[in-house]
Length: 481
Image (tube, rainbow, N blue to C red; front, side, top):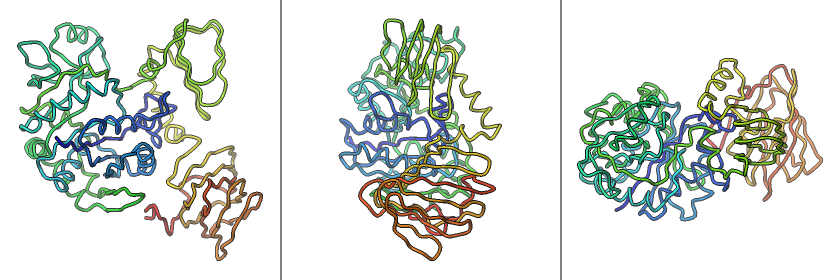
């Protein structure tokens, strides 16, 4: 049976700060094997299944980064379509919009597989087995969710109670009696013990017709808003991918609500397929740490660390050497601009640190020192009251927008590669160790005409150096107002 996967790639993943940030969300987190959670989700959807098209619902601001991540692993050239949200509105509007698009392109009987982009599944074969059962049930008009057989009384997961007289089988879909919100520990223990409850994985399978009928009955206002947002959206094509930027004026009116609250908990057509596919939502650093094998002292190390009298700790460093002495049961995550130290038992509370950073306006809640752009990256090397120094890398053939700054001047020095520069009325070419000065108010553009990365150092000076001091006149990535 042909499947149309829908990958929901949103959310900042605040419990995985400082690696996950608003501009570099959790699905882009790389695991030890070099693949991101987003890439693993995409590969899981297409491996061993009849798939020709994949739809990705993501934020407009992370489109180019998400697209590049998927193209890295899309060896079979599966068609990629992106639905770009102007702001986050939870999973119900995202799924409703995807269902509308799939019905329009592939018909109302198309079987949709909805996958969050930030989960991990260990067994591809068991996943495919559960999907085959779910797809058959979906074709009969059921809304199918994937239930995970619990291995412990987890308080961070929701639960599903199902109806069955003969236990659970991986080859059947059972009626759902009720959904249980994230429980207390004592409640979770009783739910696991009774054998009638499964973890709610947040993965779904249904036809476009079925889910849209339920939206029409249970949440018609969401369906109306999403239909209008899609109809008034802006279509574009780049690097072989098509994208629809949803109309912000319309989508802003969508209710911020999950698919569970909007449809699943109210519908009488919901079924669950039990599975032990080795699923995890990777919701904390504690969960991440379990992916690295421990040493004899229970320590799990990712990067370079020197330890003395350390036990049961997880240490992740992206560059610097980490030294630890006489500590136990810690999570230590080091990045170029932020360091997290937490008790392993409290990793769900990291989100409170992110909340404090956000309330103070500290940009480390949002961006890394190295920021990704559709043309490449920039890294802030140093900054002070009236200056900022960046290392800029422009991909071969890429170019920045034709732009202007009101409050800062810039000095560009080429380190490697070659650059074509529009500076006011001039167009000049620069080679390594050559430079140009761009006064405030000058229109300018940076182009890499070569076949290798262009690397340069940018020195900014001015009374205001914020990233929002930019006026774009032309942009091949559609970022002009």
